[in-house]
Image (tube, rainbow, N blue to C red; front, side, top):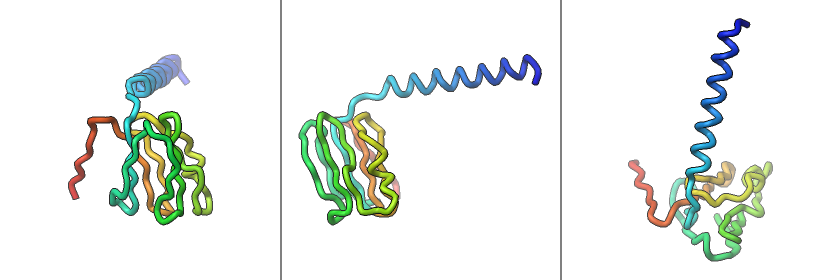
Length: 116
């Protein structure tokens, strides 16, 4: 590898890290979570109110506390959705593919219009 190659690789990595930091630091705290099952919105909960909610007929358990949401339990075999952790910033998503469930954080004024 030549010196120019190393400089190019280092520059690209540095730019990527800076962009990642900018994106992460500019995310705002979310106000609510929207629950979708099989692509259809089935519920919406405020992140300011703590609670425990059975979703999708009890296949997933959503917990909201201290302004953060997470899935505490699921009946899927790998439980990847449970291990995704807590979400609280706009745009963050927890997905449970076997149960076709998504939990998405939105801001107070934010809405999503999907064209289908």
